[in-house]
Image (cartoon, rainbow, N blue to C red; front, side, top):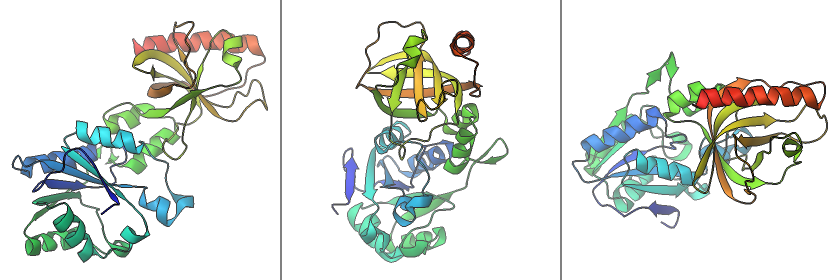
Length: 305
């Protein structure tokens, strides 16, 4: 089973919670909580998959991810998993029959005592295995199988798809309510055009993987920039700079409020989003932009205080 990577101590007789768990949002946390409740103290394993199955079957239609694989593992552990197993989703795994998934992965390899999944869970070749099949397989193979109903919040089901739609609309506050935390981008600080420095607001330009980060829509946001353990309230800009057309492609930049002399290049960084301040607009030159940037920073300070 060289496709299975353990993150944490191997556990025998545990309850396994299965899912892609992109976002580790409130709905995913309900699955982990139920697994904890029925584990009888024998531990909880979160079984997740990388890459996302859509990236394997239809990469042109695959969603951007809400979390990097590393961050997903961290959050699964924070939310109740004693260990995480990351299964590589490749052609061999995709062709496993539902019966082989149960016998090879759950019974022989993970040696589980119980399994908990969401009500829309499918497994095996062509997603032929449904929750009821898993429950029946548990009776034959001496493990308990349970489903957790989809959770609803603020007029809709909590799902990674719904969270992505909020982010694509710039609604980072609604996304945070479903995630249980601010949405985060991860990357490395890279060199930009240094336009912000020239305007008096030096920004940290985030270089990031487009596949592992769902970027909110263009606009100005309030949030936090964290670099190597230091965390600063920030005004964040996403998009091109229409005041200086043709200058650059879309970027994610954060200005750490009231900080001077920061040397952040080539360092790992995260940006957490608290609230959207405004849409991106074009100004008639540098001075009106500078005036607006001061207003944006004052608003960010107020929102983050």
